[in-house]
Amino acid sequence: MKSNSNSELDSYDRKILNIMATEGRISVAELANRIGLSKTPTLNRLKKLEKTGYITGYQALLDFDLLNEAHVAFINVTLSDTTAASLKEFNTAVKKLVAVEQCNMIAGNFDYLLKVRTTDIQEYRELLGEKIAALPYVSHTSTFVSMETVCDRQKVSLAN
Image (cartoon, rainbow, N blue to C red; front, side, top):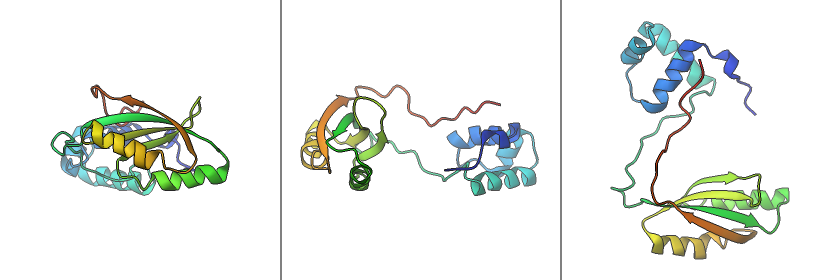
């Protein structure tokens, strides 16, 4: 459990987080200019946000069309057993599937929602039939194929 709370963030910290969420490669000088502080206090704040866990890392955003991995499907997964040990076993196994981009435990009429990315429907069918259906305790799946990604972003707008 993280001990940080949003009340520890002032308006400068929130501006830094909003900018860094979409422009992680921005220079400290440009970041300082955009938030209205000099470079040293901006760098200190940035390092503090990293150290306290508000910024957990940096990554490149990939073009999945160019990588031939643009086929996205969402899969509702229902387990036959939801004891703590069963959930742990499923969680460990699903993390090993490279095509699973996201796995969320759901409070609802199914147990997990998976976001998977493949090259095409054939590769998806193989993934579902040979790997996802074989995960521990999977009893039922239901698939929703994405026709178009309208919006794809992290939560970047922090209230001031």
